[in-house]
Image (tube, rainbow over all chains, first blue to last red; front, side, top):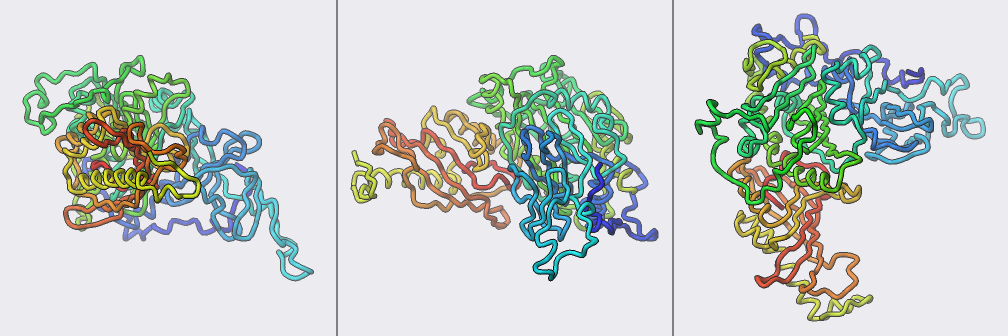
Length: 429
Length: 176
């Protein structure tokens, strides 16, 4: 971590959301992780506190894929919570991440999503920083004809850009405000890092991308992703065509602190006999069929036989393998009742043309228009609306018990409980 | 067959106008079927071996092969409608398209002829009307269409719906 930073702007980085001891941010229900108080989805004070305690706390935030910034000067902007940041590759080839903000008056430095630049020149007053974040020049620093300009003792070396810690695992560029969070691989743990390597541990190619705006608190979406129980019920397309059923061999695995998770299944190991899938009671059994089944053609991408793997990296990153449809998703809060989901659709640099065609056809399964996943864009909003005026009521999450641990089978909400375990720890509630 | 001119005089050529008017009418009839929720008719505007994509301006600029929806053939269009009706869960809504005049695609350098295919562009804006009346501007963009003559009449052989924004509100289940 280098010394220059816009400390003047961060001098009052206290926790504005903290309430007095007599008025804690949140009192969790006595039932523990088996209940989720509705207040967490609607309280602006909690959303504010998340910015400091979570997104600027001891976590790693996904910024971009490294393949987006291959050359010196290539940059990609994004946000960490509400804070604009920019990842840029320096002339030394090193990827750095800065708060995307001039140390002078706070103007945003890079306005575009991506591009290439030789330096950071602020559009407002022409202050110039090099790609390492050091302040290089200040317009009219000496004033004009002895009038104006900066005081003689102004020290440019104390007014560089705010630089964040950076760590890269596979294709993913992470950054953190924290000086204490362990390196990404250690923070993920061995099992979680295994799947990151499995999906993005070789050269990737971006083959699509979009942003999905949802009208719900961001946590309702991340819970949905961690809820392996719903996938074989809400998503009829999954069950009808045997892409993902709760009766398949599979598991939900949670990390030690609870926040990361893996949910996987093997479609070629399905055992529906004697389950509710085979007695026709579920909505998912209503009969319909596809005229053109090419959408369902796939190859087994990994020797482990896992055909469906969803991973979350705490708190807001998702790595997806649905058959041969691969994606990385980043979930960004927008206040209490809206969030945006950024999608990177990926293949591998060495994909054959036939593999690419399969990925293109399977892209119909995912995203805002995804045949299996479009429901996820609205289900959070359908929950959010009922919780608004009942902060003291709570959701019930007892599928698979009331504690947090990895479980065989996926009729379980252990992943959801795991999220809240780590969220509570980070948020101090 | 009309002759393309450099000084726009072909715009006054009745043969050229006949082609543009017919293309515009096909575009309007197709969005009408969507807006009126005559979804069984929608796929009949396309050739059996058509290509239909919904993508974004950004994806086209970046050369990404994947957009938001990709159908290879009219059977996949019908499958989309089947899935919308029987599989997918969403809140009821319908669209209303507003379309611009239809124009020859930029770069067209030979006289248009439906026998070999006419490529046209048409801008659109579309509002999404929820069952409770909430109306939002859902998106803007243009149709990039290749229209061909078939024994059954004019059909879309290729349609690329190019959305101006890469940001989609909630979901897309009704096609554009």
